[in-house]
Length: 338
Image 1 (cartoon, rainbow, N blue to C red):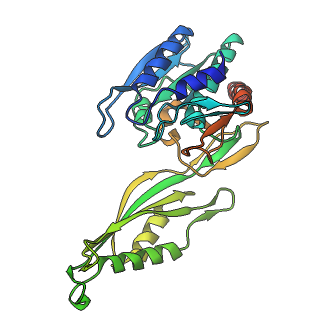
Image 2 (cartoon, rainbow, N blue to C red; image 1 turned 90 degrees about the vertical axis):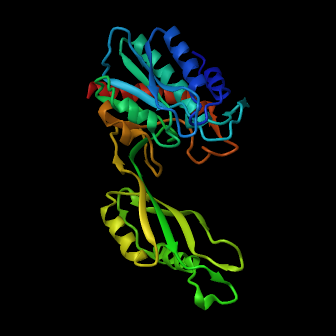
Image 3 (cartoon, one colour; image 1 turned 135 degrees about the vertical axis):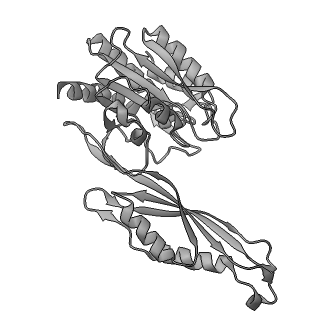
């Protein structure tokens, strides 16, 4: 297959999370035509969505339980950006995250088939929002022993991926006329104090996997400039190394009575499988892997740089895309041999 042309065709199909139906149909038809035993795996509608969506599972026709399954996601973040190219790179939304990876994984599985090594493909929806496609797939495993998940790692093998802890911090106060602040109670003042304390809090570190990262992602609150604010809220995101248990306790203690703390979402930190012969890296982002535990021991590797994913200039280099096929072949052979 022409992986460059296939990548551009995938990019040109808009598949923002919740609207993956068209790219799913394209992949289902293409993989069926390549001789796979292909099926749609229905996934519930995304919040606020109306389009039908499904994962695509493609298995060798006479081997419903291959030892290795390659997996990545079909959905993209907005806005849709059509494909373009030059001599070095292919551009467009999803170029490296993760439509180029889909093309490389399909090409690798076809080459493995030529060598009488049978592997499967699991292409899921919803990774960019809530991993709903992966959670659906995890209830229907095929019996594989290894899962090679694709995300942009510049063709290095990830030794681990950081977890995510999303925290909502809410402060309450009492409204009053701003000319008489002493009869009110400012929720924004409380929130600012709580956030200052949280920013200064010591975060977990690991000598191998690095430090926990912290971001104040959004702040809202208040009624008007001339009103003492009765509410204020912030959304925080921690990128975890290791367990969140002590971090949760520290957050609650640090915020104290200034604000209410709600832990909205956690995706665990994951240590990953590696094989000899490839460079390694630490993935500071989260993936679908924690939601695919029933699909085998996880590996994380793929072409492209995470630093350009989700940007207007997203791209994947032709060289890395071509090299990814050989990298995936190497990984699959090592896993099967070991």
